[in-house]
Picture 1 (spheres, rainbow, N blue to C red):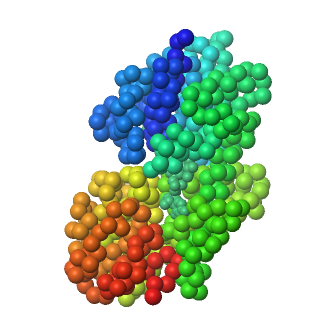
Picture 2: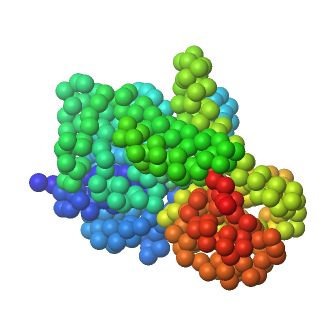
Picture 3: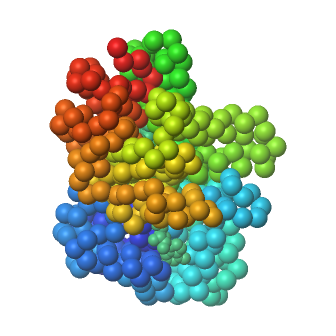
Length: 465
Ligand SMILES: NC(=O)C1=CN([C@@H]2O[C@H](COP(=O)(O)OP(=O)(O)OC[C@H]3O[C@@H](n4cnc5c(N)ncnc54)[C@H](O)[C@@H]3O)[C@@H](O)[C@H]2O)C=CC1
Ligand SMILES: O=C(O)[C@H]1O[C@H](OP(=O)(O)OP(=O)(O)OC[C@H]2O[C@@H](n3ccc(=O)[nH]c3=O)[C@H](O)[C@@H]2O)[C@H](O)[C@@H](O)[C@@H]1O
């Protein structure tokens, strides 16, 4: 039997890893082509230096690339050849016009639909892999039908992705669930079966959930909203802990033992980042507002407000502790990625903490094991509109953490990279002006030991004695 021919439009953090695992697990039963309009990105996927850092990804790509996994810029050719087409393009928050600042921008989804309609010469199953506003499948359907060649049929499925960056490969290899939404018509059910068969190469059937299209689209927004809400909840508690001498780690352990709550996602932090939590909650907020459900919109909006406040609270603590002035003081920033094991900086809390410290004239020495200097420069300039030159004056990016910490008034941990726990902080302490401050935005260091060395420690949701 000929292999199922799969095309994925969008070779990003989702399209690349997801299709690599589909190719690995599908073997000779699938042929997967990932296409993108970004030539540089495709060239990187075809090189030894992949465009994204993700543990385990290199090995999977090396095993499959050129056999049943291909990366290409030939969007039209891949659409023509495909039976199943994943749409895995970006859906960022709209920065203009109607819904500015909260609605998802679906222009890339629409351009995919137009390309699929133009190049399809036979029936296709079109799969929303991107996170989209509720009822986007209807938009796709209308555009496809209005623009396709006569006689061509399409089935639209919703198949949102739940992987987290930094653990994408293990999440994909053994997902908690795969969600497929489709129409209740016989054709819709047949399309669901065809997509399910792709996952059944490695995912147990009882983990493949099928629903109607709209439940599937909304479940993705709901999942991210619930996850982010937990972080904002524990971060709200962290502020109360700091004022009452309760310890947020102890509170998290105590409530997480309740099996109804569970222990995961209760790590208080400087604030959640990443390309999706904020965007998807705002998308939900926009949906609720447009349905006239303003109380619902306000409820979810507060999760984002709390997160912004938590980031600001952390940078304010640094400034206050350093005697209300950080002007011209060297502050070392350990970690710039939005979480460990990724080089991704989108919406990283580090960007906003650095922005505030730059507003106050601090000299920032930044180290991150995986984020490139050009990316840090780009991110900090993007929050310095009209005064981009301050980044050149105030910021240095280091490839050696000890160089970054050397002689700093304060060290601030903003990402929970494991290597930070292994540093020789006694050696660092000796180089620092006194009092020497350490701000642990992730609660990962051994605070008692550091205090013993002489550091003044501030952590999230705890008083260090
Ligand atoms: N990053 C993550 O961990 C997760 C992301 N998602 C969702 O998946 C979607 C994709 O996210 P990422 O992979 O992070 O985005 P990304 O920005 O890394 O990748 C999207 C890619 O699509 C390409 N693209 C845009 N329009 C195109 C077109 N018309 N034709 C061909 N290529 C086109 C872009 O050039 C880009 O390379 C978003 O909707 C996101 O919300 C869902 C789960 C996890
Ligand atoms: O739709 C998406 O893009 C994805 O968003 C998140 O994945 P991701 O953003 O990659 O990473 P998370 O592990 O969820 O972390 C997000 C942010 O929350 C922070 N976080 C996480 C957990 C926690 O307890 N405390 C905390 O501050 C992390 O440091 C990070 O900044 C979800 O976990 C995925 O299921 C989802 O598919």
